[in-house]
Length: 333
Image: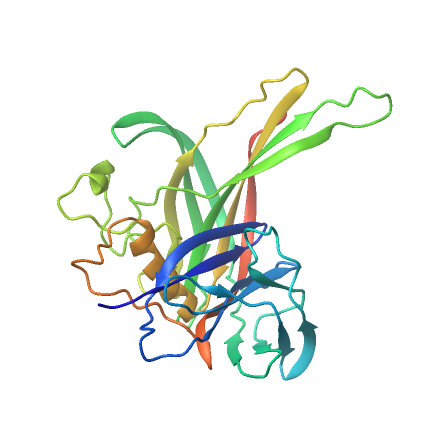
């Protein structure tokens, strides 16, 4: 029987952190523990988090004493020690990367344990920034999802492919709902009580997001043979190389309302188009299969997660992005 090690993969995104627990196929029988290094870095973030673990039979084991070195174009830019554990129950080893990355940079990240026994490293070329978002048309439409019809906002996003190269992209629809509070003290402005992010969207009608298998209804959830949903919004330019393309996606217009006197709401949607590395593209496609709940390990072949970590296992990816903000609901006092 094949034994799996479980590892926490954290997907780093601009102004968002998305985490998910997945199986990393690794036969432990004839293999000693290995370093597991994971980071999906956004070059447009001021800070990014890298995670470090050991492989194990049942669960990943945590590291306490290690150093992470970051080099950009051969120059050492950071030598990092682990951040304090978030909680006693979650002693995950994390490193806060603050190096500045620009398109075309050659980035190398090394992880070394203090006892000198383990050394893992990855090299990544920072991808060029997307050519840009040319236009976004929005319209509120009725749409059926899971047997119910509700109002959804439709986005038609037009962008141009970077010419004469193979490109890998990721679309992120970042819905930000903000709850504001009145400040009754004279001379002081209102304040933000909280901001919530939602990243889910529906892309089933788009030929690119569905790998050429679009659907106009929610039959994707009722068919005899389930297909993976493109949860992470990844795609390549094979269907629109060297030209512009208009992508169609939907998300809910539902907004949480303040239920206490003196609070009011606002909502913005930030459309983020990212250039990602090839290894990140195939890694997120593999996660789509698992997180869509269509993968059955008893009948399907084991999923092979791509990686680029030497001397260990895991993935380090770097992305660049362009974005546009759409104001859906302006705070009303």
